Amino acid sequence: MEPLLVVSRLTKGFDGVQVLHGVSFSVGAGEVLGLAGPNGTGKTTILNIICGLVRPDAGAVIFDGQDLTELPPHRIAALGVGRTFQLPRPLRELTVFENVLVAVAAGRGVLRARDRAKAREILARVGLSDRELWPAGRLSSGAMRRLEVARALATCPRLLLLDEPFAALSIKEERELMALLKSLNRQGLAMILVSHSRRILRQLAHRVLLTTAEGTFREGTPGELLADGELET
Amino acid sequence: MNRAAVLAFVLVVSLLAVVPWLTTDRFLLNLLILANIYTIYVLGWDFLGGLAGHSNGGHALSFGGAAYLSGLLTLAGCPAWTIPALSLFGITLVGALLGWLFRRLDGAYLLLATLAVAEVAHELSLALGFTTPEGYTIGGEGGLPVAPLLAREADWFYGCLFWISLFFLALTVLVLYWIRCSLPGLKIKALAQDAVVAQTVGLNPDRFRVATFAAGTLVGGLAGVLYAQYMGVATPSTLSLEFSFVAMTVSIAGGKGTIIGPAVLSYLLNVLLGWLWVAPVVRLLLYSSVAILAARWFFGRGREA
Image (cartoon, rainbow over all chains, first blue to last red):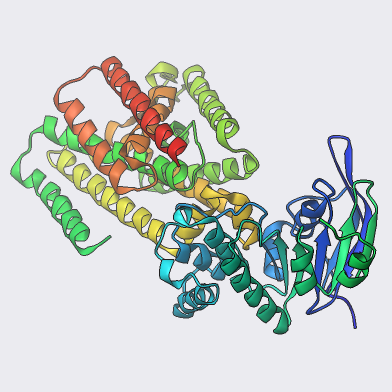
């Protein structure tokens, strides 16, 4: 079966500092790929390149047979790539409901009743129904992370890019988010999950791509990398 | 708008609409016509700079540009009835073009670029002169004459122009407020708050940049066309930096992006300052003070957030 996402020989440097040195990997439909490694080794840059926020210096990103490398972010989102950010970026002056609604109806000019229903359904799924009329800027950091996931889900993604979604969550919030992501994955949603936690990667990821400060990459199952002592962060 | 706000809006517009039946006083009607026109102009900036968050430092270009297009079309011999529509169409195209050209600029850079374009137009308006077939020299400080649709010497001219400008003001408020509360308004607000996030959920920032620039310039241009029809002339002052400054100041002080707040503040200020015969230089001083206070207040709020 063809992989959903194929990343080939990506290189990227910022101001003379080479961050990515020809990284290649693939993600199958319904697969969760973990991205782990020290800070500054290009994990977020990989996500930014996939979703079109950063152009690579060389290499290609193929999603479902389509080259994403030259496409702008909004086109990539429309093709089915959703993402969350390392530091939550809610649209602070919009309500929680509007944050999700704008993503649900991004491709349309007119709002339909079922758009509202869908936005409410997604908020219920991430446990934010009781705060849908709150300004998003008033949410706690944990709730903001859930809103990030809700907003990404509202774009109907086939591939979800999650940049440290469990950071700064309480144990209860972490458990709820874990259950949600597992449930989404069981429904066939592929994910790339950036995380420093081997416990989380072991629970969610089918494979892990480990980045290093030297610019090399190792790929394997969480079990293999743990056995080698590489996933100790 | 909730029910009470709709009722208040209808009441205010209805009360204003009866003024020409109650009085033919030209001073009062002139005051109200200019308040209508200048408020439409301010709303153009409030939509573009306030709601969409594009810091346009040269909003006078929409007003003065439309007025000057009316003058140039008059000079070209276009029938008077075509001039307002053609001027509006032309200035909207200019707005869309600027939106496209400056689609990668934001903040201070966008402010500077738009200000510079308006200043170029202002200097051109001062420098350019034309000689009519009758041998008259027009242009420069004196501006360009505009062919009027209505007979200026008629008794009903002021009342009629008041109603026309009031109609367009009410229409502008309603349309812009509707956009603000609609799905396109939600998308505009999302892009204004965080364009990166908005793109990753599927919004095209370039398309919205062009559309909001075109719409904001159309509204400012509508005010410019009405002004040119009222005054019968397009003068360089309509393209001046001060004029752009006034739009920004009133919008920010009235609650930028709220549409209703800047509309109310603009109307009250124009009527009050006109009524008191406040000299232009004092007005500018007053607007500058308002700008400083508003900036301080908004900046303070921003830091708290």
